[in-house]
Length: 314
Image (cartoon, rainbow, N blue to C red; front, side):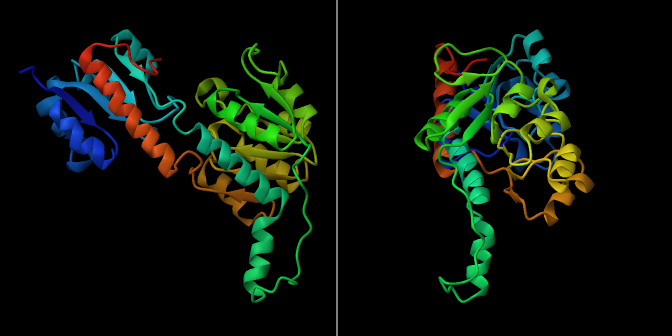
C-alpha cells in the first residue's frame, strides 16, 4: 500500500474533507495543538502539502520547518500573505482558490452599492424606530440603473461584477495591467483616467506591494463629489487616511467597505460617518463559496496524489 502523504492543515477545513482526506493523507491540524512550531519540529519532515488561507502568513520560517514541502494549497484567492519568492526558489507548487467566491464577492459589491444608493440602512433604522409604519419619515434615494461603473481589476470577480452591472444597464469601464481582448467593456489605461469617467469605483484587484494605496487622494479627487467607492478586495489597496479626508470634505459622496486598511485610529474615524457602509470581510464568505473552495481543495489534493496537472496552479 502506498505511504500516506503528510499534510499540515493550517486553517479550518470542512467536515467532508476531514472525513475523506485520511484515506490517502495523514492530517496534522496546526490550530488544534498548543504550539505549531513544536509540532513541526517532530513531524516537519513528513509534510509534503500545507493547506492554508488568507489570514495566516506562510513565510520562509514556516516553509523551512517543512524541508520536503512540495505543494502550498491555498483556500484563499489572494496570495499576498505568501512568500512567493521562497516557494519558487524551492520549486514548491502553489495553487489558490480563484473563481470559487467570484459570484459571492460580486453579489456583495452590489449589496454595498445598493445599500448606499437606496439609503437602506438609514431607512431601515427609521422603520424600526417608528413601529414599522410604512408612512414613517424616509430619506429619498437614487437608482444605480444606467450609471457609470469602473472596475479596478477585471479578473474572475471583476467579470462577475461587470455581468451584474450590465443587467442594471450600466456603462462599464475598467482598468487592468493590460487591456483584455475578450470583453466589450471600455478600457482605461490608468486608474486616474478610470476614476474621472465614472460614478462608482469598485476595487476587485489583488493586494500586495504592487497595489498598496493605489486608490489615493488624487484618484478619489478624480472620482468626484458624486462618486462612490466600493472595496471588496484588500484594505491595503485604498489609502485609508485619504479616504477619510475625502468622505469628510465631500471630495467623494460615500463608500461601501468590506475591507479596511490602516491602523485602528485611522479606521475608527469611519465609524461615525453616515455616508459609509461597512462589513467585516465577508464578501466571499458565503456557504456556497465555502463549499466551492472545499471541493476544489479536495480535487487538487487528488490531482497531486495521482500525478495529474494541478487546477489553479500559479
